Every structure is written in C-alpha cells, then in structure tokens.
Image 1 (cartoon, one colour):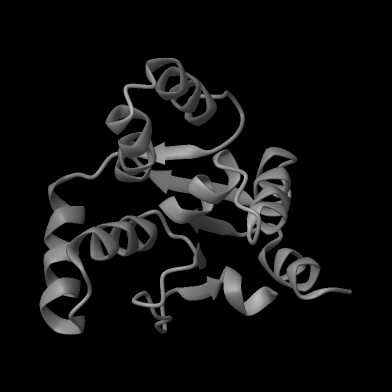
Image 2 (cartoon, one colour):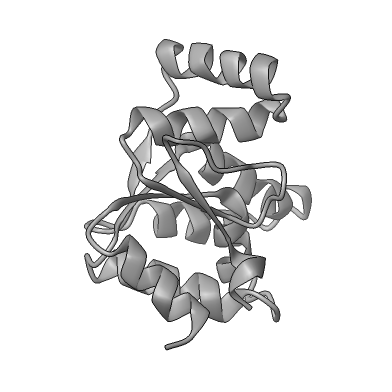
Length: 150
C-alpha cells in the first residue's frame, strides 16, 4: 500500500479539513500533486472521508482566475465548491476568528493559516490536509502534508 493509500485509510470515516493548496493543485492539474489531491477529493466524494473546508479556501482559490479575468474559470470553481454531497463549506464566524487570533498570537501562524486551522478545530476535524509547512500538528489536529506522501 502506498503512502497516499495508507493516509486515506487512516482518514476514513473521519472529519478532514482540506486546505486551499489541495484545491489549487487539483483544479490546476499540478504535475507534482494532482494525483494525490485527486485521490483525497475522490475519497471525499465517495463518502469515505468526511470533507470540510472554509469559505476562505474558496476565496483563495478564486484569486488567480480573477487576476487573469477568467470569469468562466471562476464560475467553474464556484460550481466545484458548491457541488452537492461533496464538501461542507464552513463560514468563519466570530468565535472562529477569535480562535484564529489566539493561534496567530501563541503559535506565530500566518493569519490565513490560523483561520483555516481554527475552522478545522471548530468543525471537529481530526485531520488537516495541506502542503503548507507553516501548519503543524497539535494534540487536537493531525496535519498531513502532501509532500510527505510522495
């Protein structure tokens, strides 16, 4: 069993927060990480993994299409995120922003990373899948770095 298959098996049945870079790799068909991102998203779509992300992930994924005035691509990305029976897209409420500020203050995380991390914690996620080395595991959340699965 490969590393990605082992990670997916460990995450099966659990709440998993998906960071922005996973969507960017998948939607942009990144040559290094597309297959791993696709495997994760397929497991979420199949219901093997309970997938979560935040409104901020969708907004971050839309930046490049808006920079290049690719409104059709932006519309496709919005449709991807809004697909039924796929991901739960969580709003970032006042309590989540407060927790993000605490994480930023105590752990020195970039604010956007702290916001994603706080959203994952508040959603009861057990895993956080990313490729951002600034995001580290805690006693509450296991972080899985895609690059460690190569």
